[in-house]
Image (cartoon, rainbow, N blue to C red; front, side, top):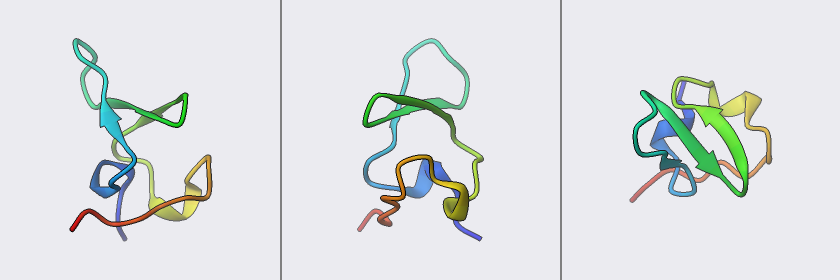
Length: 45
């Protein structure tokens, strides 16, 4: 299953290990894509 860190909308937060920002939500990079808090998972090209 894909993870949030593979989404084009997930951006790593500097200084925080495997934590990213997705439209203002703090999301761990290993969150499964089907649990996306914004329901907007799009794989990176």
